[in-house]
Every structure is written in structure tokens, then in C-alpha cells.
Length: 374
Image (spheres, rainbow, N blue to C red):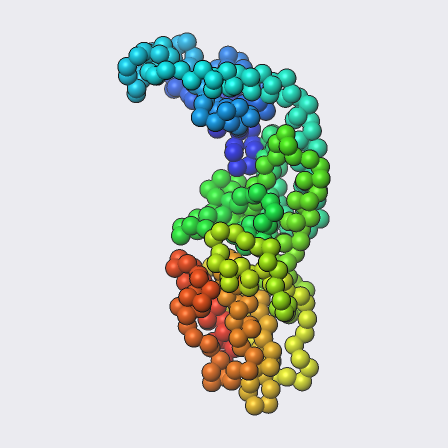
């Protein structure tokens, strides 16, 4: 890649191309994220092949371009045969309207490149300053040459899927693959030396010609609020306070991946508080950040051994947090002998938790059962 689409770092394409040419190795670069943002000179760069696409610079979708150096033209062969268009490399009637739109987009991008880059650089700096005050944040690719329209930041103490789920007003992506069954972190961020946890708690922000300073301020404010919310409810919270579950809910979180009941419980905001004075309190926890699920319950029992109040702390995906919050509401009034209301399979059915997340509910169950340990 000429420019990394994940962290915005500009690769040393000229140096790589020179090494390849010296050794007779054909070299192709994907310049989709560079075209329209950086000056591209294929002769000075000495690449053999360079490709880019129209829609990345506000041109029509469905068309791209491949540059082939004159010397390397005999090195490639067509995969579509017939009419002999495109010098025999790609047969078929040319999409004239797309070609013209592509050319117009390139012309506009070239004319505005310097001013747009300066504008986006200011906003990228504003975004970084806006979240940097949280502490425990890392700008991925910092210190390397980068394009300003891609900003990738990792946040300590939060889980990536929960972070994205709690930002319904922002169109952001995370380096985490938690929405799939694999759960593999971004290999790009791991290659930078980020831990698995940090790689999975990263957000990728993309800016463009429609982005304003007001958008940046709003995005930074939303991220600060959600990171603080998730950190407050995490067992890793260093202030030592036990969070409560607020009665009532916030219905703003509506990602397609969460069932309505799960959205309701995930959206409940924690607040710092204390368990009732004079109550016998116990604590049980299970999991850790490395397991992508860490849950801690705080229970207050009366003299008869009945739960008077239940609080929770949790680090994990939205389903993990939702189940822990739901259980905290079910526990008051239950006795020690009947403390665990059903099984993880029952909880999954109630809150429509997908099958691949059942393992994390076992951590929730272990934390609740730990409250019964002597």
C-alpha cells in the first residue's frame, strides 16, 4: 500500500521500488488511499504498476485505473478476451461516463490538494487533542509520515466492540474483529507493537471534504464520554468505587448487531456509589482483560442471607455488559441458596446473545458463583 488504509502511514514506496528494480523484481503499489491526497509521480517513484480508484477521491463508483510502465507492458497478460480494448489487456465497451467522471475528480483533487491537506491536518490535530486529555490513549503511527484524513487511536481500559456500540452517532471502525467469531485483533496494530487488548480497542476515524471543525468537536466529546463510561464500569477502574446501575435506560444505542433487550441493558449508565451501610457485602469476580471478558459482582446481603443490593463491574463486549447489568437487576430478593437465576444458555436466550458469545457468559456465571465462595 502506498498509504495504509488503517493508520494513514505513508510507506517508503520509492525506496522499495528502487530495491525491487535493482534486483529485477516487479513492483506494484496500491495507491487507493494516496491518490488525490499526495502528489503521485510514477516516473520519479519508479514503480512498475500503480493502481487507484475513483470513489476514494469523490469520483464515480465502479471505476479504477492501473498504471503500467512501458518497460513492464510485456510482463502482464489479459484475463478477459474479445474485442481487444485497452491495448488488448481488457476487452469490453469502455464506460465513457465513468472515465470522464474519474478524470474530473482527479482534476478537482489535484487543484484542491494542498489546501485540503492543510485543512484536514488542523482537524486531525484537533481530534487528537480532544481525546488525548483522557489519558491512556495512543496515536497509532505517531512519528511517521501520515496523511491527515485517517486517524487511528487506541484506548486503554475499554473493549473495542463496546466502544463502537456506544458511539451510534459516529461512523467509525475498530481494529477489533469482535463482531465476528474469530476475535482476531488488527495485524497492522500488532505489527506496531500494540498489545492484543490495545489493538482491539482502537478506533479509526476518517475525515473528508465534508468534515467540519464542529464535527470534530462533537466526535471528540462523544468518544470522551463513552470511554469514561466504559472505564467507570470496568474492574480495572483505579478509583476503587463500586459502580451502580442506574434505574431507567438510554435508548440511543441501536446497532444492528444487538437485540432490543440487549441494547436496553448495555445502554444503562453506571454511576459511582456505595453499597448499603450495615449490610454484609461479598465480591466475586472472574476473567481478565486478556480473556476479553472480566466481570465482578458486589452483593449486599441482609441478616437472613437475602440479596439487598447488587452492583457489577465489567470489561467486555456489549453482550457481556448487558448480561451483567441484567443479572444485577434480577439478584435483589434472592437467597444465597438460589442466587444464580438460570444458566448462561437461559441468559443468552433472554437477551438474544449470539452463540459465539456464550463463552463470555461463562465468565459472568463464574463471577456470580464466586460470590458464594467462603
